[in-house]
Length: 161
Image (cartoon, rainbow, N blue to C red; front, side):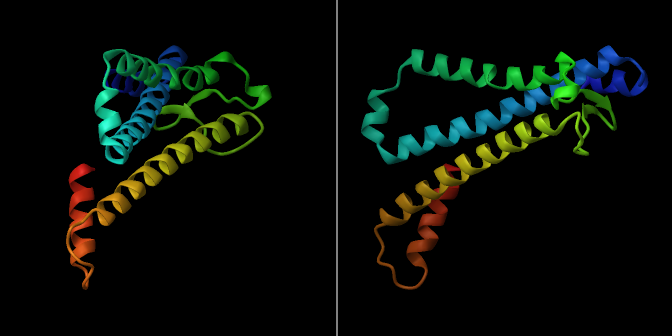
């Protein structure tokens, strides 16, 4: 937030723009990877609870947290490498400093990478919560008369989410 305010105030400073673009991309990437990781973790906990409980180790979570922070790093650093002629884009000042969203020869690979990563995270989260919903629906104790079974499954899934 402070970098955004300073960048808006001194709009012409390329270093601040590059820093803001990197941080926006990096933290957005972390949030996407974190959402996918939490979804996978919850899905594993619901699908096999006994195996999940026996697998709770601090080293597992240390590796997961390190991976969550390291995965978005190369994607955020790519536009800083001045590879526009190869399609990797650069951070430009718009309302915030980020890659221009108009696809042209200077950023088509970067836009494709960001779009693919976003869709991958959306698909992982959707699949995990669909699996959780069906497990909750299958394990509901009420008979499926009308919508009582589906209502209980939706309540259970929404509590988990």
